[in-house]
Image (cartoon, rainbow, N blue to C red; front, side, top):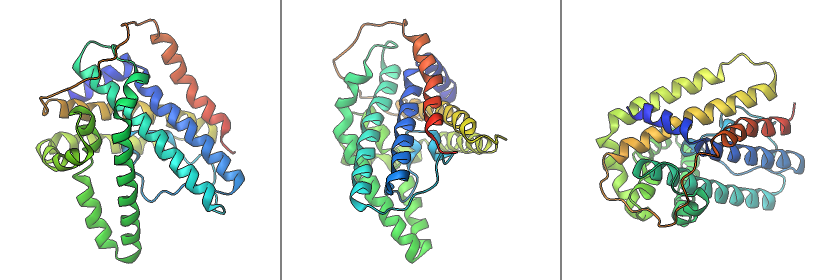
Length: 274
């Protein structure tokens, strides 16, 4: 039921899938610029499960060395800001679809409502991933233990939005909700891993085509599964608060939004290096 509801909203509300697709194109652009200018972004572990995008599956360019620490630091900060804002739109829109009439809230108006809290969460997550990276180079069992502990707090950004609460409060509540919904979350996670693995095994020899298909499929599947988790948690949380700013309900943008969703990965594919 959770996954079916996630699939329904992903198809019926294409702006959901456009968010990770757009982020993917931006990350690809930053990666290409970094390739030519000799910088990369600081990334210790892949915690992009909250915002699926194809770059996490398919490397569209060769890894460049960090020859410019200043540019690398700036690029890392920019990406954290972009992802935090995108997550605010992403989760905020999902919450609105769960709570009220479809297509009622503007994603551009709802994003600033959660942005500062999502940014604080992203900063905390970034530093934790750095600590785990250090542990992995010193004593890997300690890093493994740390990852197992972090898993219990993966619901934090969901709770921030669903309960409209502080980062600290969401962190405190995450383990309890994780254990309460462990069976459903495990099933959704396992199915996501299987589907993700199958995408990586698609027999494409052309890198641009692989980028396009991988990005589109992974963003679609990831959005479906993330919405399924949101729906699961929605049943466990009973107090809600939505921003007051609304827009008039309309389905006129449905076709152009899906056209945009299908074209966005082409832009990223065009940029990648053969």
